[in-house]
Image (cartoon, helix red, strand yellow):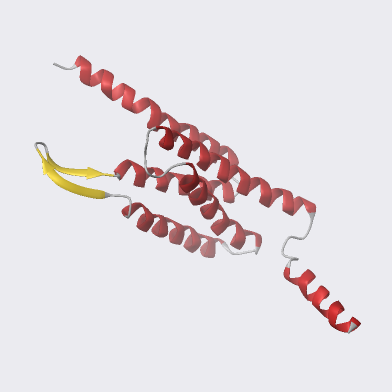
Length: 166
Protein backbone atom coordinates (compact mmCIF):
# COMPACT_ATOMS: atom_id res chain seq x y z
CA UNK A 1 0.00 0.00 0.00
CA UNK A 2 2.84 2.39 0.85
CA UNK A 3 4.50 1.75 -2.51
CA UNK A 4 1.24 2.58 -4.31
CA UNK A 5 1.01 6.08 -2.75
CA UNK A 6 4.69 6.66 -3.41
CA UNK A 7 4.21 5.75 -7.08
CA UNK A 8 1.22 8.10 -7.35
CA UNK A 9 3.18 10.90 -5.65
CA UNK A 10 6.18 10.48 -7.96
CA UNK A 11 3.90 10.41 -11.00
CA UNK A 12 2.12 13.61 -9.89
CA UNK A 13 5.44 15.34 -9.35
CA UNK A 14 6.59 14.33 -12.82
CA UNK A 15 3.34 15.54 -14.41
CA UNK A 16 3.59 18.98 -12.79
CA UNK A 17 7.34 19.37 -13.35
CA UNK A 18 7.03 21.33 -16.61
CA UNK A 19 8.19 24.46 -14.79
CA UNK A 20 11.68 23.82 -13.56
CA UNK A 21 12.66 26.68 -11.29
CA UNK A 22 11.43 29.92 -9.74
CA UNK A 23 12.87 32.01 -12.58
CA UNK A 24 10.78 30.06 -15.09
CA UNK A 25 7.66 30.35 -12.91
CA UNK A 26 8.21 34.11 -12.65
CA UNK A 27 8.81 34.49 -16.40
CA UNK A 28 5.69 32.51 -17.36
CA UNK A 29 3.51 34.22 -14.76
CA UNK A 30 4.71 37.69 -15.78
CA UNK A 31 4.12 37.10 -19.49
CA UNK A 32 0.63 35.68 -18.97
CA UNK A 33 -0.27 38.42 -16.48
CA UNK A 34 0.93 41.16 -18.82
CA UNK A 35 -1.08 39.68 -21.69
CA UNK A 36 -4.22 39.50 -19.54
CA UNK A 37 -3.83 43.04 -18.17
CA UNK A 38 -3.16 44.58 -21.58
CA UNK A 39 -6.07 42.69 -23.12
CA UNK A 40 -8.22 43.82 -20.21
CA UNK A 41 -7.29 47.45 -20.84
CA UNK A 42 -8.50 47.21 -24.43
CA UNK A 43 -11.58 45.31 -23.35
CA UNK A 44 -12.40 47.89 -20.70
CA UNK A 45 -12.35 50.66 -23.30
CA UNK A 46 -14.60 48.61 -25.59
CA UNK A 47 -16.98 47.80 -22.75
CA UNK A 48 -17.23 51.48 -21.84
CA UNK A 49 -18.32 52.13 -25.42
CA UNK A 50 -21.06 49.51 -25.10
CA UNK A 51 -19.44 47.02 -27.50
CA UNK A 52 -20.17 43.30 -27.38
CA UNK A 53 -16.59 42.14 -26.82
CA UNK A 54 -15.55 43.56 -23.47
CA UNK A 55 -13.05 42.99 -20.70
CA UNK A 56 -13.38 39.22 -20.33
CA UNK A 57 -13.30 38.54 -24.06
CA UNK A 58 -10.23 40.66 -24.66
CA UNK A 59 -8.45 39.25 -21.62
CA UNK A 60 -9.12 35.68 -22.74
CA UNK A 61 -8.01 36.39 -26.31
CA UNK A 62 -4.74 37.96 -25.14
CA UNK A 63 -4.14 35.29 -22.52
CA UNK A 64 -4.91 32.48 -24.96
CA UNK A 65 -2.64 33.92 -27.64
CA UNK A 66 0.17 34.33 -25.12
CA UNK A 67 -0.26 30.77 -23.90
CA UNK A 68 -0.29 29.37 -27.44
CA UNK A 69 3.15 30.86 -28.14
CA UNK A 70 4.55 30.48 -24.63
CA UNK A 71 4.11 26.72 -24.30
CA UNK A 72 6.05 25.76 -27.46
CA UNK A 73 8.69 28.38 -26.71
CA UNK A 74 9.28 27.02 -23.20
CA UNK A 75 9.30 23.50 -24.65
CA UNK A 76 12.17 24.45 -26.94
CA UNK A 77 10.34 24.69 -30.27
CA UNK A 78 12.39 25.83 -33.24
CA UNK A 79 11.70 29.08 -35.11
CA UNK A 80 9.84 27.33 -37.95
CA UNK A 81 7.52 25.63 -35.46
CA UNK A 82 6.89 28.93 -33.68
CA UNK A 83 6.05 30.50 -37.03
CA UNK A 84 3.39 27.86 -37.61
CA UNK A 85 1.97 28.40 -34.12
CA UNK A 86 1.69 32.15 -34.71
CA UNK A 87 0.04 31.49 -38.09
CA UNK A 88 -2.47 29.22 -36.36
CA UNK A 89 -3.27 31.86 -33.74
CA UNK A 90 -3.81 34.46 -36.45
CA UNK A 91 -6.12 32.16 -38.42
CA UNK A 92 -8.06 31.18 -35.31
CA UNK A 93 -8.60 34.78 -34.29
CA UNK A 94 -9.76 35.45 -37.83
CA UNK A 95 -12.59 32.98 -37.33
CA UNK A 96 -13.45 34.53 -33.97
CA UNK A 97 -13.44 37.99 -35.50
CA UNK A 98 -15.58 36.86 -38.41
CA UNK A 99 -18.22 35.81 -35.92
CA UNK A 100 -18.45 39.37 -34.62
CA UNK A 101 -19.17 40.93 -38.03
CA UNK A 102 -22.85 41.38 -38.85
CA UNK A 103 -24.26 42.53 -42.15
CA UNK A 104 -27.57 44.28 -41.70
CA UNK A 105 -30.21 45.54 -44.06
CA UNK A 106 -29.38 48.27 -46.52
CA UNK A 107 -29.92 51.82 -45.41
CA UNK A 108 -29.75 55.09 -47.39
CA UNK A 109 -25.96 54.88 -47.68
CA UNK A 110 -25.92 51.24 -48.80
CA UNK A 111 -25.06 48.08 -46.88
CA UNK A 112 -24.84 48.35 -43.11
CA UNK A 113 -21.97 46.36 -41.59
CA UNK A 114 -21.32 46.19 -37.84
CA UNK A 115 -18.51 44.62 -35.89
CA UNK A 116 -15.51 45.35 -38.09
CA UNK A 117 -13.81 47.40 -35.38
CA UNK A 118 -14.58 44.69 -32.82
CA UNK A 119 -13.05 42.05 -35.09
CA UNK A 120 -9.99 44.22 -35.72
CA UNK A 121 -9.71 44.91 -31.99
CA UNK A 122 -9.76 41.21 -31.16
CA UNK A 123 -7.14 40.60 -33.85
CA UNK A 124 -4.98 43.35 -32.32
CA UNK A 125 -5.53 41.95 -28.84
CA UNK A 126 -4.32 38.54 -30.02
CA UNK A 127 -1.22 40.15 -31.52
CA UNK A 128 -0.54 41.88 -28.21
CA UNK A 129 -0.94 38.54 -26.44
CA UNK A 130 1.51 36.92 -28.87
CA UNK A 131 4.03 39.70 -28.23
CA UNK A 132 3.68 39.31 -24.45
CA UNK A 133 3.91 35.52 -24.68
CA UNK A 134 7.12 35.76 -26.70
CA UNK A 135 8.68 38.04 -24.10
CA UNK A 136 8.31 41.25 -26.09
CA UNK A 137 6.63 43.10 -23.25
CA UNK A 138 7.66 46.61 -24.33
CA UNK A 139 6.26 45.97 -27.80
CA UNK A 140 3.03 44.67 -26.26
CA UNK A 141 2.67 47.74 -24.02
CA UNK A 142 3.41 50.17 -26.85
CA UNK A 143 0.95 48.39 -29.14
CA UNK A 144 -1.73 48.53 -26.45
CA UNK A 145 -1.24 52.27 -26.01
CA UNK A 146 -1.49 52.80 -29.76
CA UNK A 147 -4.63 50.66 -29.98
CA UNK A 148 -6.19 52.60 -27.10
CA UNK A 149 -5.40 55.76 -29.03
CA UNK A 150 -7.15 54.40 -32.10
CA UNK A 151 -10.18 53.30 -30.07
CA UNK A 152 -10.59 56.48 -28.04
CA UNK A 153 -8.94 59.36 -29.91
CA UNK A 154 -9.80 58.61 -33.54
CA UNK A 155 -13.59 58.87 -33.13
CA UNK A 156 -13.10 62.34 -31.61
CA UNK A 157 -10.77 63.42 -34.40
CA UNK A 158 -13.19 62.15 -37.05
CA UNK A 159 -16.08 64.02 -35.41
CA UNK A 160 -14.03 67.23 -35.35
CA UNK A 161 -13.07 66.85 -39.00
CA UNK A 162 -16.66 66.08 -40.02
CA UNK A 163 -17.93 69.12 -38.09
CA UNK A 164 -15.42 71.38 -39.88
CA UNK A 165 -16.22 70.10 -43.37
CA UNK A 166 -19.00 71.90 -45.29
